[in-house]
Image (tube, rainbow, N blue to C red):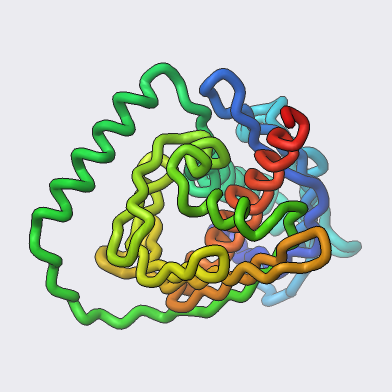
Amino acid sequence: MENEAGRCEISELKQVEGEASCNSRKGKLIFFYEWNIKLAWKGTVKESGAKHKGLIEIPSLSEENEVSDTEVNVSKKKGDGEILKDLMRTTGTAKVREALGEYLKALKTEFTTGMILPTKAVATQELTLQRKLNENMLQASPVALGVRIPTVALHLTELFDTTVEQLYSIFTVKELVQKFSKSPAVLEAERGGKFQMFDGNISGEYVELVTNRKIIMKWRCRNWPEEHYATVELNFVPAPGQVELQLDCKGVPVCKEENMKFCWQKQHFEEIKGLLELTAQNA
C-alpha cells in the first residue's frame, strides 16, 4: 500500500485460528467458517524515512457477515507514524478484505469438488457422462504437448474398519463409488478402462488392477493443466480387523498439492468411512 505520505506492506501472518466446513443439504452446499486472523505490517514515512510497525486483527471472519462488514482492526506500536496507520486503516483494510474475498471464493468453488448431493437429475447426468466418455474413447488419443510443470509426490495411509474385498469394491463398483461421492460416476474397472467421478471433475484410466490387492490409475482433476495426469497407486494391506489403504501419487502439480490431499482425505477417505458405517448400521 502506498500514497504520497508513505509505503506499507503486510510483513507476516502471525496467527490463524478457527475452522471452515462445508455440508451438502438437499442438493445445496452450506458453508460454515469462523477465523481469527492476526497480521503484522510495517511501513516507511517518505519524508523522514522513519520506519514503523503494527498489527492487523480480524477477530471474526464468519459466514454471519459479508466480507465488506467484517471487522478489521489496525493498530500501531508506540511512537509517531499515524500517517502510516491511516494508510493501513484505509487502503490496507480494503486490500485485506479483497484477499479475504478471494479466499471465500476459493472455499466455495475450488475446495468443494463433488460435494453436491445427487438429485432427480442424476440419471440424466450419468447418461451424459457415459455418452461423453464413449465419444472420447472413439477419438484418437491426443498428442502430448510436452510442457514440463513442477510436480510433487504424495504418500497417504488410512485405516478402514472393513475387509479388503469390501474396500476394493468401493473403488471398482460404480454404484458404491456413486454412494460415497454422492454424484454420478462412470467406471470401466478393467485394464485400459476409463473412469469419471464427481460429476466429471475427476477422470482417468485404469492402468493395472490386482483384485483385492492393488489399483494403479492415470488420474487428473478437471482444473489441472490440459492432458496432465498423475499416477495414483492404491495398495490394500490387510490388518487385524481392518484394512490399511496405502496411497502413492506421483506427478501432482505443485500448486495443487493441498487440493489433492483434501480430495483424498476428505472427499474419499472420510466419505468412504461414512458409507461403511451406514452399511454396518443397516446390516
